[in-house]
Length: 231
Image (tube, rainbow, N blue to C red; front, side, top):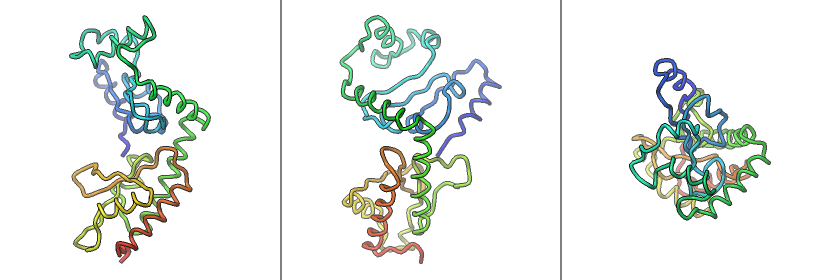
């Protein structure tokens, strides 16, 4: 689900011009087209997800002037971004032992991101992945959780209603999940809301051939489970 960040930012800046806007871009930075200064004052994200690095450290994008306004506010040493930035300015070093392997992977991921064509091209690939999977899943009888015609329907991670066990007695999500895993595909086992859903991601070093292989495995697993969602 995409949040309407441009609309929210416009309203905040119109009615609360002194307010600061913080955006959690964990699952969008690098894979969704937007310019941080247009929508927020502070952006937080990580080295993995759409950047396609590895987990290991977080990133904060903010103006130095805003950081200076926050000096002394941090309740802990670990979360004191101002102090960390001071150390980088003075010595170019982290305050503690840095996650070298994650930083090196992040550097390589940025080079690959640029070589692919930047945000627009990566977003187009993710969108093509998502469209293919969503089309194939609905053809099999799965129902999308969000309205595909709305702007909130994103191309990073898509939720599907889990079939009703009362209607499809052989359906069992954990069996579905584990059988896909045995076939080499891991989907999101957790729910994004109180609704009975599961999610499939379109991000990462994934291409249409991978999506085709995934959907073939989904068909095989459903047949093995004796679940026909078209009935």
